[in-house]
Image 1 (cartoon, rainbow, N blue to C red):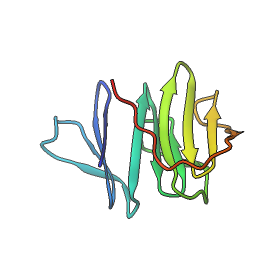
Image 2 (image 1 turned 90 degrees about the horizontal axis):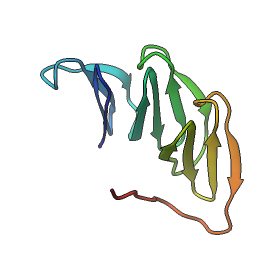
Image 3 (image 1 turned 135 degrees about the horizontal axis):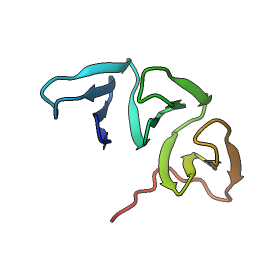
Image 4 (image 1 turned 180 degrees about the vertical axis):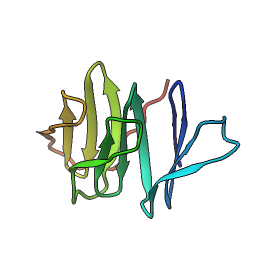
Length: 119
């Protein structure tokens, strides 16, 4: 399960989709159905999620979705640093400097599966 929140909503990613609550979890609406959500990052109106094989992003808190990266194996959203978003797949790291509109590939020498950040 993946969780994120902004000033208006709580987002919950599950094995069966993405949910959003505007009343502190009392009720939930389905934003995305039938997808395993691995990670969620929110920044203002921008919402980016990672499934097992794609990254989807929304510029309006989840109303309209786009798929900038598709057909990748073991995809996980890693982090946001400043205006950069980073995502990792089995042997590649992707980064976006324009809030998910375009993505560049950074090659890595060894395969990895999941990287966790501890704060």
